[in-house]
Image (cartoon, rainbow, N blue to C red; front, top):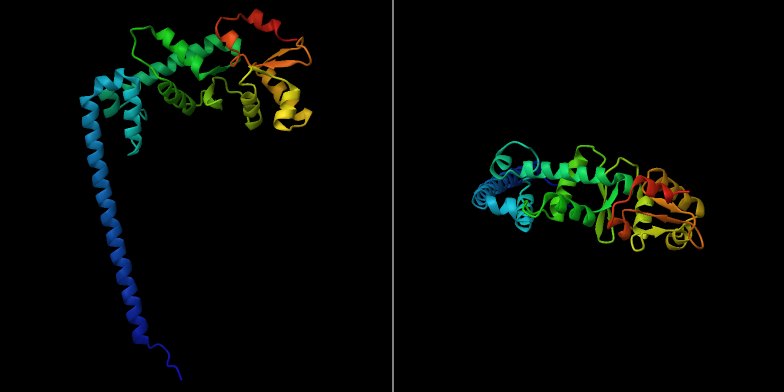
Length: 257
């Protein structure tokens, strides 16, 4: 007959488990302490690096991207506050604040033409043109970071992925996934039709019309009702010919029924 496990054996087993757990807790705490020390050392070295290469970070956009990536590895955000070490050392807070203001100015100036949507490429070109050739260089990565800060302020700014790049939205219009995929479909030609949406996305006509009507209502699309075959819905933010010249509100009105 098999004997049961004695009370002494059970107590011994529990004691061993408690010791293992205690030892594991000590090891985990030691690892956390070591990791914290390593992060502090890395942060200290990062601050020293920033101090040494301050001018390169401020003037060279590619260098600035690499520095931002280094910061991200240890959870440091130089743009998180307009005060403190990073702002005082690098002036990056002021840089992105000024860039955000320039982005807003460009978007407002073109809103009558594009309804509040602009490609990241065009925005980049216009910001560079407005800054002048002697100003500090600005990359598209800088624009994306500045736009994210504007978005966090609840200013209506956002980014929509289209064709490997982005459309920058500068108005607080409600755009869901349906609107986004229609914008992506229109990316190659600058316009889209109801039939193209039905064939390309396998949608019912009512769904396609609902999305297009919303884009028209928000001023993000223009309707060419005289087009051959069927009406075409043009997205001025994607229309390269319009991007090369300024269009007045009167010209824009001529493209609506």
